[in-house]
Amino acid sequence: MTDEATDSTKRKPSRIQQKNRKRVLEAALDVFSQHGYRGATLDQIAEAAGLSKPNILYYFSGKEEIHVTLLNRLMETWLDPLAHLDPRGDPMAELLGYVRRKLEMSRLYPRESRLFANEILQGAPRMAPHLESGLKPLFDEKCALIQSWSDAGRIARVNPRHLIMSIWATSQHYADFEAQVRVLEPETDASWKAAGAHLETMFRKLLQP
Amino acid sequence: MTDEATDSTKRKPSRIQQKNRKRVLEAALDVFSQHGYRGATLDQIAEAAGLSKPNILYYFSGKEEIHVTLLNRLMETWLDPLAHLDPRGDPMAELLGYVRRKLEMSRLYPRESRLFANEILQGAPRMAPHLESGLKPLFDEKCALIQSWSDAGRIARVNPRHLIMSIWATSQHYADFEAQVRVLEPETDASWKAAGAHLETMFRKLLQP
DNA sequence: TCGTGAGTTTACCAAATGGTAAAAAAGCAA
DNA sequence: TTGCTTTTTTACCATTTGGTAAACTCACGA
Image (cartoon, rainbow over all chains, first blue to last red; front, top):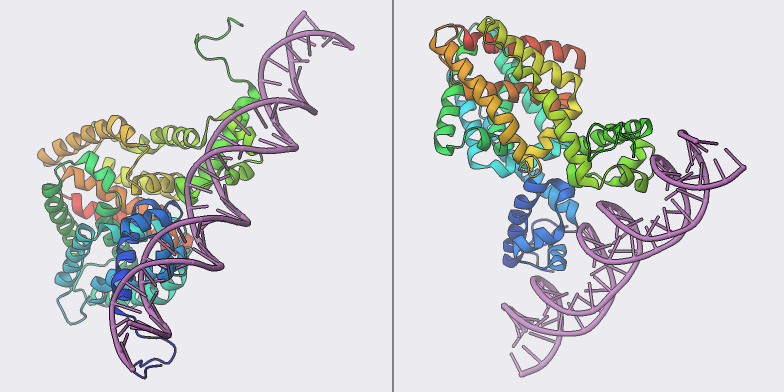
């Protein structure tokens, strides 16, 4: 036993471990986000990762562990924009910046968005604890912040909870319902710009004191 | 062969046929909306319907036909509020009425909302044709109507396509992401009222000329 | 170069799942 | 009742799927 390990319970992951675990997770993100948990198969993930199925199970104990690992890893990234709502900043600028960043996330990381959407749609069976422990505290904190801005008259009177949910809904819509958006608005590039402008207008008008 | 049938290719469905097909579709709506297409099993549907699996396959040719039948039947109901946007009505009242009806649909028919959400999330593999032929024409028509209202100065200048998508996103969010909403806002009754008030305020401010 | 542990493959398996065949039962008109 | 159709059940089947055992290969330090 090398005493190089800082943690007594875990061994250091080898270079090849890191690389292959990454490959599996990348492939799994593709497959899970497209088909949902039950619709995805280990064979699909294996093929996408360029590894054999038993090889994948050498790195992860099972399908569920892959899924949970993905959800946990992405949670932080996903909450990052909300966490950056700065109490010291200008309320309107902070909130519109949040809207913009959230839309940007949908544009850059649609798979991540759909992975979460799938999970929530099915009742969050594998994520309920993380919603309670990770999302809820942050959500409550930022609701209080927005409430204080509202109370101070720095933005219009607004229900913070439903404001945040509206921001989520409108921005994530473009990733989660992409198949529908594509039918109704085929010009992809222009559509993102128009969406950004629309959301900025909408939330600016809503928040103008 | 009874000459009672009006259509030469189809026989009249017996009373028991109608009843049992209905039971299957009701059960399938439960199961599909909760688990998605691939996550749902015929056994689950059979148990929910109180019928045996082969019995279900006596009424429907397979899992896919049940799913497609559901989607087709629900499409009309789902588009109904949009279809009722009245060109002769007051623009603001019409649009806010649309928002209210759409939210009401989410409250009363969350399963239907989630069924569609599941289908779209996975790329609408079984509904793409219906989006083109059913949704798109109506969408384009109503976009033109809103554009004309906007041009006439009866509502603020707004991008009709993204306005409608925002209405969809915000209202359906409460059904599709119910599992998340429930964690963040446990008081269900009050939450629907607050959601309604929030959405009315938001879209009124957006549309005020 | 040789041994050892990390990594990979081959060959499986048991359960789940969509679906079928055919017999049995239930309606129902005469 | 008799005979016919409609409906339901029983007993299967082939495929898919998550997962395992064990043999095998490979990298690498002594």
